[in-house]
Length: 142
Image (cartoon, rainbow, N blue to C red; front, side, top):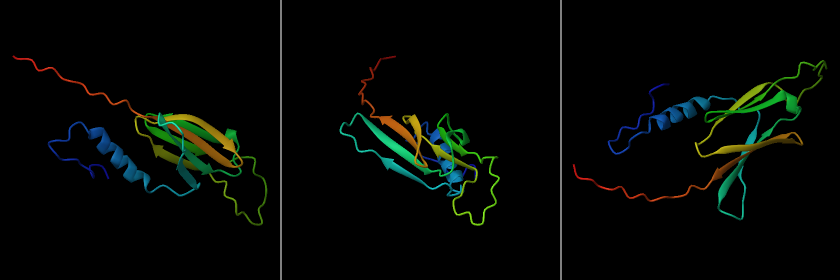
């Protein structure tokens, strides 16, 4: 629903892109729950960066059937169905249907790797801690 979220405050300036992101997030809520996933924060000894892992359960998918892309701030994971499935299932409890899962990343988040191991796709994200800078603005007379 475009135009649903508006920040209307004279003291808040330049957040139009943030408003668009909130609307984008609202639209993502309708996405299917497949495949199931976890998001976890790695505990690290240094405070130089935050490391997050998105882990998706992708049993039955091989690397050639998975695609991980970043465009702008959108992280997209696509699982393609193999065209070689010729089996006639008597019971199919393990889903290997196609999927498309999207995540919105903050500007400071970087995707550092994607690894497929034991039926789990692990996408590692890093967020370096920002350096805080206080800048004095000189005042001139006109």
